[in-house]
Every structure is written in structure tokens, then in C-alpha cells.
Image 1: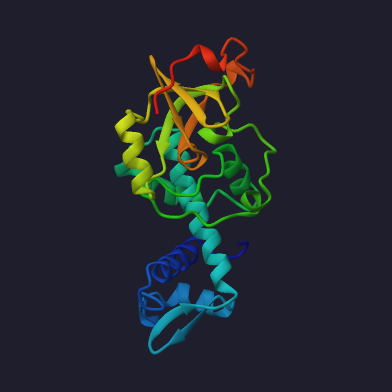
Image 2: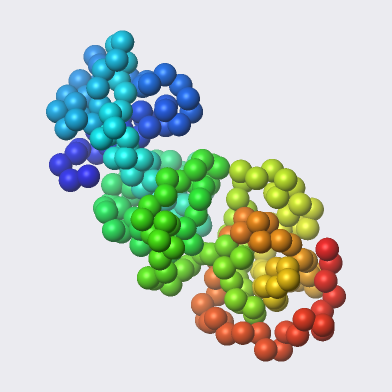
Length: 232
């Protein structure tokens, strides 16, 4: 968003989140952020309605991009840099403004196209998600995207699916634990410690793994389907 100041971008985020949470069209009155409001109004990104600000049709996609950068920044800080939760928002605010167009898609691909931020809020899709690009090596990927024999450490479990989360917790699937995919069909069978579990694709897609690239994408030739006890 060339030419839009950082404070104006933050106002776009605030208005987008307000619409996302089905609140009023906006949460900022015109007299409460005059400089930013004037900037966004002149750019045709916001308009006033009954004393409240709201995004225009031109402003909505720009605001979504700003929110996307912020939530990708949170995901990057939490999963790759192991930033503590209490520091996430402040540090993400600083980082997001560096994620100019193109770099945000590269980071999204690096993280395996995450669908939710660490707080469980949806990350707006980018072109890389829609096109399923894999132009850079991933650091984090859903378990369902791994090849047989590939593994790493569990980075996080998607929190917006309570049924899946409950089942995975009952298996002891927790961030930081080592995991390895044994086979992909007919079910996704993975190994944690001395235990093996079989899950469907939907559940496998909700577990994100920090990959061990030194292990490469080699097939686990020693892992034969009949050699392991599978717990369902």
C-alpha cells in the first residue's frame, strides 16, 4: 500500500476487524483520527456514515491485506522466532509494515499457508494461498502435506476446530513434541514416541509441523505399513 502511512494502515485494520466481528460499520468517529481519516478518505478507502467510519469497496481489500500482514507477522513470530504471547501483538505491529507486497506471500508460503493467527483469527487469503504456490521451501507445513518418512516438531494445532482439537489432545498431540508421518493412505498414520495414530485428512491438516529439512523429503523406505502397530 504505497503512500499510506503506518497509522492509516492501522486504522484500516481496526475497521476491517470491526466488520469481521459484525460490530458497527466502524469504530472510529471522524473527529477521533482526523489526520488518518483525511488521508484514507482522500484515497477513497473509507467514508463516513451516520457519524461512523466504514470501509469503501476499494478500502475493504486494502484493509484485508493490512490484517493479513499483521496476522502473518504474528504467526512468524510465534512459530519461527518463538516469541511469547504477551509480546506478539506489539512486535507484530512493528514487523507487519515491513511485509510489503510479495514478501508477505513468501512468508505465507514459508509457513505452509496458515489459515489462522496464534489467537485463532482467520488470516485473509493471498494469491499464494489461492494458487497453492510452493516457490520457497516451507519451514512449517500441515501434517497432511508431509511425505512418508518426513517429520519434525509440532509447531501448533489449529484452534478453530474444537472437535479436532479435543481428539488430538486426547492423543497427546502438543506443540514441541517430535512427530513423523509414516504413511498417507488410506489414512494418515503418524508416530509420536512409541505410539502411532491414524487420522483422516481433515485432522491431519489441522496439525502444523516445524519441518526437519536435514532429513529431507526422503521416503521412509524402512517404514513398511505392516511393521507398525497402529492405534485408532
